Image: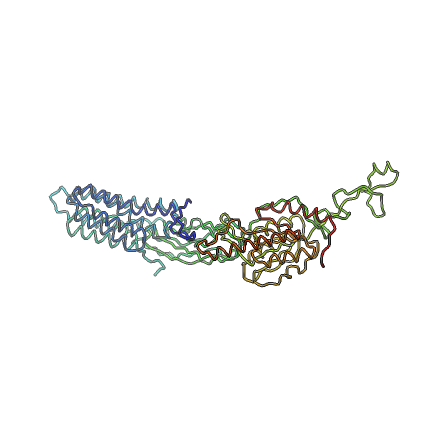
Length: 185
Length: 427
């Protein structure tokens, strides 16, 4: 693997950048940028300074993926969205939600080993496959939210129904998994 | 109760997901519920599929012998992984050890197990214990972790590399009974000497029939005997001058000396000669008696591995001569920084031993130019060293700079030629 090493005094390496390390940082920062872009599209009048704070929090999370930076970034994104976006039925909520998921998964992979650990293709494929299932569920809920927004009914029951659906899905998946083989997990 | 623990990522998804979900429901904001949904789904999915297996990790145990630059694969197995889980393995790097990938590897589960393979390559000779590798296991969402578990460290014996040295030059004083060198005396061998009259004991197949028919007397073809020679490699380990950054980087004087000793030993042993080794200035590695054969090469390489420069100072200069007799080819590998080295060479030369000094001082030695006293001391020592080398040359001791395996070729030819001339030696 090609490595860029910055040497300090006495020939000691100060910073060592590998493709895997750069990819890990990019996988954390890009979703935040996409989420900020989605928010900007949903609320063009919103101030941009929170994006700088989010970027700083994401950098902190990239440097310490097993710390509080990731949680702060996700909660900060939610708070900014809640305060800045005026339209509750905006379609830009789905890209922002997918970006949040991508950020969470990138941080989880980065925290699983040392910074820059090489992740085998099979691990990534499985993770993307599972993430695609989650995105499908999210898209369904986003569609339901869009549909319910135009009706005269209050959205609360619909949200409750969606929550129940979300709660049931894991157990359905677990039951399928148990049927497939004796191993649990 | 299992050994699986929730990760911080699981906590993050749970807290962020349910906080956003609660805020969305409470404030009647379906868009915020959409934001929370993937995190809530991931959290609930991971909670529902909490692993209940009991993983186990195994790794290689024991000691390995490799050559410098030779790549080996460290392999650890993790069993008992949950479905679609993965294992992460990390092997720590250290000085003169290249690890690929340096930051570890994440491997997917297959049939409940996975194998983590990491390439390890030592770039400098020596004997060392590697750092402890570690493995950990995760579920499909990286929400539950088992480990990390430390695995036993490997003991690595790194033998110096022996690039091919194919000198055609003969050793100056062949001795002994068998070998590839042409001896000065006639005997059973392969190289033609002369045609002489038949004597009692000559084999019939040696009869030279054309000359016998022409002269009317039986004549035979005489040959030179094939013999071996005794070579002793002397390694000066009193000082290690210069900085070593491994096989492909900068070389210190000990790097050059040890690698040159390995090359020379292999070359002369392959020719059937008897080769011995003496190390000065290193504790624990002093002497390998002369012998021949492949096993002797391994003995020499094993001894070179444990050389630590400067651990035994103040040896008697006369110790170099112990057990060496006139006619031995002694090859001294030294940076000639210690005046005692020149003294030892002079003693050997006066005893009638053919000595070749191989200068192992690196071409470029970084001296701290900010310290004028140090720079001046270095310059003075270099001037003294030059005088000492000139004195050795005056004694007839060739000094060769080690530039590779063929540096000795010309010198060995000169020595072989000079060996035919009678001379006086102090006993």
